[in-house]
Length: 212
Image (cartoon, rainbow, N blue to C red):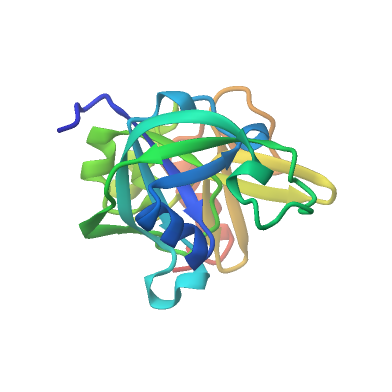
């Protein structure tokens, strides 16, 4: 049905009403100002459930084929909320085919929050957990760390005072965090830049070991 290189966009499903709209009315809204670059190219839209879904939260359990999209103002999508603060904002109205429940959900091992994940159909099918969906220059180090017994988080948001950083990899430890960046992206103080495995091992040990 899909090709390995087809674009899959993972979106956050925050409440039951939005899920019912996707399931029963066949559409899902994405604010244009927050939409990732591949939104208009997505062939599949998958949903990451939050804590609002109880025991089914913090995992991808459903996806749907994308039949098309259009730009619509929020007030036209949700006419019962004409006075909403974002009523005039533009949204992608993603037109969906029937929702498909996954036989093997893709969980978040640490119940992390995400925004969007841009991935491909082959990665989506092979993923055992959320971090397997990401594709970046950190792929090789991510695989090396997993093979070494670590469970790194990818595209992880860290705060240092008022500064916010998005690091390639992060390993939560009992006494802090090992942040890892690849390339020249901005990094918080103390982050490891393009480290080898032994450097990561030492950094994790210095922070009391990985928190599981």
